[in-house]
Length: 326
Image (cartoon, rainbow, N blue to C red; front, side, top):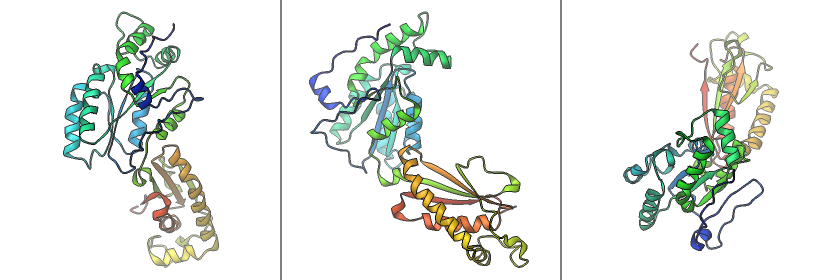
């Protein structure tokens, strides 16, 4: 079945909007468009067809530090904007999903955009769509019911939804066709649309120490085994201490392999963290394990955190010692 015909955008709308289509196409930006300041408060409205990827988009914005509300009734948009104005620090970055489930999003979006423009603020609208074939396939795979599906089939419901959301599509700043996009590719497209300041762009690195005899942390992205180092546990004066204390730290760090190991791990993270950031990852968990999780892993984790806590690294570092209280 052919896709329902979409209304033609006016010249002003066409010049305002940057459309993003299939993987081979490129975004078009008007020459007179002014880039959004990286420190500005941001309000993004996600709309589009059911099954086109709005939930995945919302999860991405959440990972980027946005306050997200899914399926916000359009009538509550003005109320939420008032709430945002009352607590700008909490709602500095907001992503709202408005779609057909709660009614026509177009009138409230148009009204909110006009009000924000008067106040010197802005709202970015992202519209997600896909071909009939892709949408029917997705509904078939997930066995979810289309929100407009009653007595008619899925394909007829999709056509009806296209018709109802046509005005919202015309209000969009960016239209993304997700027909042939993977989740990773959709993330890349969305990240490319959004300026991010240094704080939002930072990757949170969580360093966890553990003992192998208690099991590897399930949340770990990277796991390093430091049992190759000589164990302070077998030194009577050091056995009751932990890697947080200077005698143990000195014992561990005096081993040449310890320094070289930290050099390599720090170099690996300096190489990979920017790539994780570009992929939209907001958090990376690095686990260091020794036998009991009390000596070698703790000493190395504290030293690694010190090396990574530099303003120019674009990272925020936290250290957790899982076995310290055992």
